[in-house]
Image (cartoon, rainbow, N blue to C red; front, top):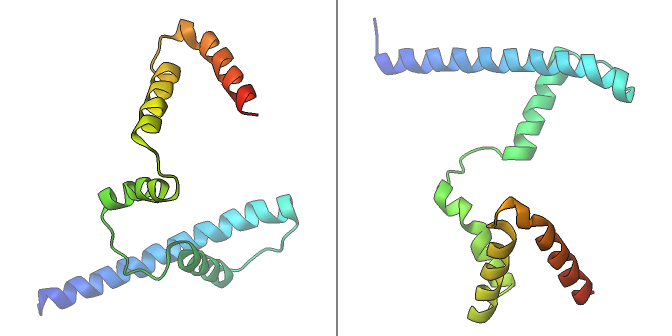
Length: 125
C-alpha cells in the first residue's frame, strides 16, 4: 500500500483543494447574488472569487505560522490598558465600587442608577 504518511499527505492535500473549491463557489454565488444588486458591482468568475478569498485570508489573518496562547491573548488588553492608563489603588477601588453599584444590583434600582450615572456625566462635563 505504501507509506501511510504519504497517503495521509495526499489525502489532506486533496481535501484542502476540495474545501477551497467549495468555499470559492460559495463566495462566487454570494457575490453574484448580492453585490450587483446592492452596490452595482459586476459579476465575478470562479477564479476571481478564489482570488478574493485568498486575498481576504492574507489581509485579515496573515499568511499563517502564528501560533498564540489564547490565555495570553485574552489578557493582552489588560496589560495594554494598564500601561496606557495606570490607576492608583484608590482609583481602582473607586472604579470597582462604581461598577458594582451600576451592574450588580437588582432590576428595580436601575432607574436610580441611570439618574446617578447621568449626574456623574454632567458633573464631569
